[in-house]
Length: 497
Ligand code: MN
Image 1 (cartoon, rainbow, N blue to C red):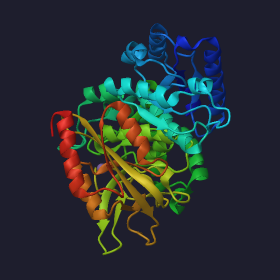
Image 2: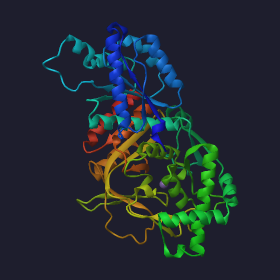
Image 3: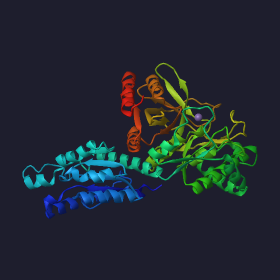
Image 4: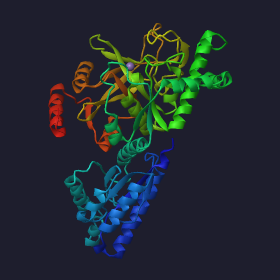
């Protein structure tokens, strides 16, 4: 995934009252800033400078062009000088791209000895951006405001977060969530409105029969599977029984065939994410375990038991995290450790956890699976690397989608779990296990989530705002009673609890 292919149009506002000399300087400063932004690895996309915006017609046509441009993932505005905001109404009204209002100033310092009215007239963002902010507020436009000196690293970091969120939004606009079968029978939280999802996120959530995958699987040759297994041998440890021909190695080779068949299907259907369900595996020998892990590692989103919302979110998190240290995986809350003072939650899934979050080299093993009634599946076994992480989930409340994010700290697993041969993560949620669990459950959060050590809650907030969905954060400062009130206010805002 190359995030440089995403363009972020930099539109600097002014007006024609200033005269040519001031406008020349505005354009020159904007060019210097753009060139510098493009050299900074904190900004993953390509910043593209547009002509200075000085007339209503010019502004409108810039936004129309952006809407029609398939490479444009977002728009950054900044008012170096004063740009009367009624000029922006028509343009903003047709805007289709995520918006960042950059509030900065070309000069860092006030030149105390030489400052005069000419300097003041050129360096006017302190009031020009207030005029600009008013029209966003008046039009109730979703946007991120990033304030600070344009060379400062913290401001660059915040712009980078927004760019990554916008890249994920853009990525979803023409991608398919390929559902193999439906949701797990009788489960409520994995259901949802797929039409609304496409309207909000762009994602096309569609279903294919498992028979289509089974037919592709049947056509994959043993030689193709062996070739892929060589790659497994390099990237992962293989349990002893998997190195030579036999039942266990055959189980791994079956997963290799499923991986190849799935990837073929994804390429044919332009899928960026997929779901499976253990209740619908007709024609497949095993539940896709290792195959799902491998495909997540390659950047595809995944949701088990038909959970297309978390699949879509996993892919979006993978786009946001591209090139950053840490990993992204589908996850499930499994069981608790209630020892006083050392409370923790153990996350895992039947099989499908992405090795990008692993500490050390994952090991491929084959064991029976007590659900689904299929052959023993191959899977990667590992512990998640410790560190700061977040859990994010997306639910459908009927009236709206709600995203819930919990900041957590993943801790080192010091005990062996020889009878639990799956990938697992152990964490302490903020503010503490009990309050975090109460809040998550109060919000209606699922047992499924996206787990990431590469991203902070800020990425998910930016993405949720761009998509126009509710965002609820559970972090160090969360108080259960305050959150109860917050959810009531939010219900009033959305017109339904
Ligand atoms: Mn599950």
